[in-house]
Image 1 (cartoon, rainbow, N blue to C red):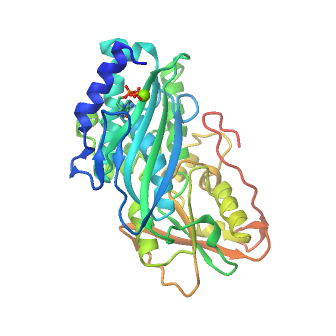
Image 2 (cartoon, helix red, strand yellow):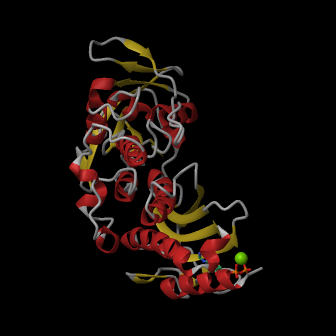
Image 3 (cartoon, rainbow, N blue to C red):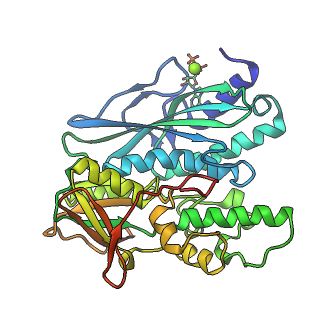
Length: 370
Ligand code: ADP
Ligand code: MG
């Protein structure tokens, strides 16, 4: 059932995205019918399998309206689904969005600005990857929270998608990009929030985290400055995933949404192996190092942020020792961090060569508890 607010919002979405699944790249491949009817109609590419993933983005669990700008919430909503497709080497195709919004956002003009900015963030990332929004659902959220659920459909040549389960003992382990940045930026965001409420706190905010006044309209998800916001604008590694599949480099892959320690455990369990990684080899995000130096976050060291801080949306993958894995793929740094080993135990080697068990310690959003 629709009320007036819902209808006008759907009209807005429809006018922005067009009835046949338009992106800035034009009409999308294989979209026969987009927004406006009871269903979208899609024509899958021949010889390909469809990969489907769905992810919640919930106010209070995954973002805070007082900390994350609306463009960031829209971007992150889509990024979560795109990252799952990247992890399997899939090419993204279409997106569906179910959105529950507080009544005020559906009825009051001023509050609708939040929703429009949410769609700006989602749209810019969608355009970058040529993924049209072709359907969804809109509803009033009785609890007054913003709740979004994204469905992403991608495709991969039949039988070729990268799975968590293909790793073998002896394979080398790699990660893309740098780790711990998203958790570190979140710690700075918390600091900024408490600072404005109570006394000024001493640590200085890194310059890269400042958001210029003009950023709202000019912000571009491909720009260097958005890559400097790993929490607000994580960059799903689609080009890396596609290259890993195309070049047949990886035996197994997963995206790092819950943190390396937790996601590595998932990959190991599915592959029936253990792992050893070395702390000295981890590519720690500069923000995690700075946050630690400034003592922004209470107990976590930069290493702990890299191991357990989630939401980096980098890829973790395994490749046989014989595979020639380059140092960078599609402009993204690739770092070897360890190996898969026989058995089921996962250990972390410190710089002196001593090994200790690595417990999964995924990030709990906003509570900073593991
Ligand atoms: P129905 O009640 O038949 O599901 P709706 O009135 O909910 O239809 O939706 C009308 C059209 O708008 C459908 O094509 C639907 O996919 C699309 N739509 C609704 N909400 C959204 C949204 N949040 N994002 C994208 N498309 C949406
Ligand atoms: Mg509906």
